[in-house]
Picture 1 (tube, helix red, strand yellow):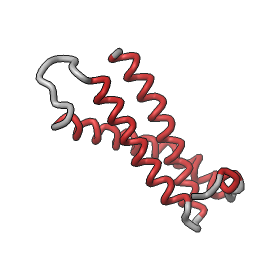
Picture 2 (tube, one colour):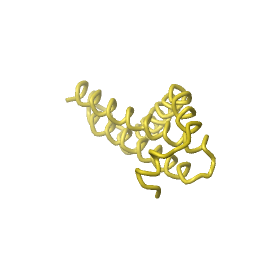
Picture 3 (cartoon, one colour):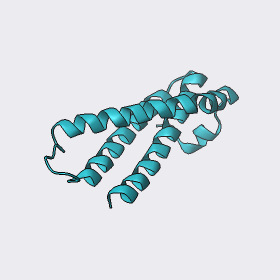
Amino acid sequence: MPSLARVRDLHARAWSTATWSAPFVVQLVLAALATIMWLLSKWPFATHRGYGGELAWTLTAVVISTLVSLAISGALLTSPSSRRRGLSLSIAGSSAVVLIGGVIWALCVYH
């Protein structure tokens, strides 16, 4: 895995790609979160009563979507292409934003 120093030394094209792709990538990460929430609602967190287990359901979906996004980001970060490394930064940043926002939202709404 590349060190943080290597991330700081990325080419300007990588940073440009990360900046321009972030608004689109965050939507893909949110779509992955919604899909994971839907899949989790079918079996492990299926409840027949109102407001039962939504906090755990939401936090589990947020963590899973973040881990999947970070795994994809880590795979792209090792690429020799500057654009793929920039996309990797965009995915990592978007997953961090979704993680922070999802945890805060879940705690505010369900706690």
